[in-house]
Image 1 (cartoon, one colour):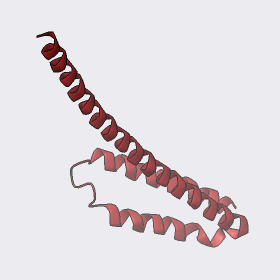
Image 2 (tube, rainbow, N blue to C red):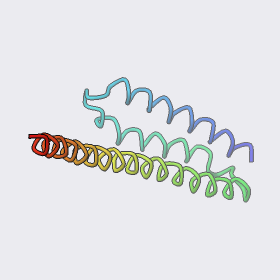
Image 3 (cartoon, rainbow, N blue to C red):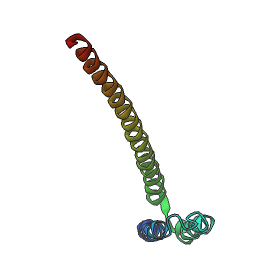
Image 4 (cartoon, helix red, strand yellow):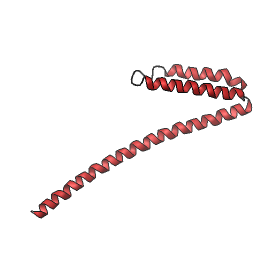
Length: 111
């Protein structure tokens, strides 16, 4: 069980270190180090996998499901925000056209 928690700690350290490097190198060939990162994650898993035991494997599967749910939720949230932003801007342009038409009609009615 202790091996599982050591694995999680080391995985988090490696992941957030790589995430920080990714943001540091944004727009400067950010995808060049991705294959090496996956090899690094595999090496960390292989170092601890033999000592997991039943509860270690249980938490490993549970943690990975939670991790995938979190990433999926973030992707869905980004999709939802972009969709709402586009819909809001389209509606705003339509409202501006309607206001302009009403003003023109008011001017025509006045004359």
